[in-house]
Image (tube, rainbow, N blue to C red; front, side):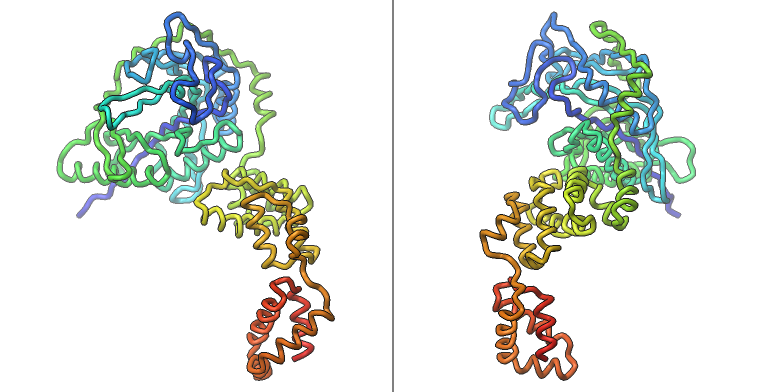
Length: 476
């Protein structure tokens, strides 16, 4: 009888914070600059240079801690983690080991068996390392120190997740909390959110955890899911073959869908941690915590509840709209501009999602203004344009953020509501299509749809469908 195995997963999530400057110096954190353009003696580890803590980093870390139900450590310190690697110019990283800023939190996800709390062991602040760029042509590696000193928080979960689905649900939840707080854009493709997966397997019912491995180099949710499935199977195969799982760090290659060992990892790996001598402890007063709490924005779960109650839109709509902060902002601003909430929601969930998919864009890439979406919906409600014209105008708004009123006026797209003028056109359509008239009289209701279509064609899509239907029924 084959054994049943349970997967046990914990995550270490690194998030680059959205500060304008680095954690210990005044250099810019902007992504995509020329290599080594955003550097100074502090972030390149020059002897004699001294770090100065960026207050905004502490506030973002506290905000994330509060939103994830953590206790804030009111007496917190930095430590030196010593290791020697070319992208680490000081030969140490300033991090937090003994007194991290946040501890003992949780987030709630929809797990495999309903709602589930995933524990957060701690959140600590640290500086990012530089980036090694490996040249294929010259057989050498170069270092870009632009990222060195960019502020990070590391969110360390408890080993509470049991499947790839739960891991993705947890990461989605964290990402949305952090994006709503404005603490990071959490773009996995730019490295501003990175996850290391600690995974072990054990027989179902076993008390003791199995030997875990850590997987790095995961830069998309799909890659994370694939890596988890692959590593779970690899460990089960080893156990079934009577071999031992080795505690090690593995690197995932998403193109080959394969992971390989990078280095063996002992628990007592000697980073020779000691308190950072160049930085004073951080003392966080009750007042400071209250100030950060007072600035916390409405997070996604609260928004969803409010949208259903205040805007009377279905839970399904609220779920999709709030799954992106950008979409939620557009929705609220368009409604504040006087547009009907359900119609705004329909445009975001229908046309907007369709165009995003067609153009392989993310909701964060939307550039149109909520005011122009609201103006378009008002034109439809006022009977100025019909739905097929509205679709064409919306595509223009999506691509170029045009003013819909001006565009409709300049391109002569207003709906034709002139009954007398339309009657002559419709009489001609009826005369030209005796078969459809016959079908309608024989009880085929659908035949009228064909005649409406022919009239729309004759009026270049500008006629009012309601008036066409009314006149057709009179004539027939």
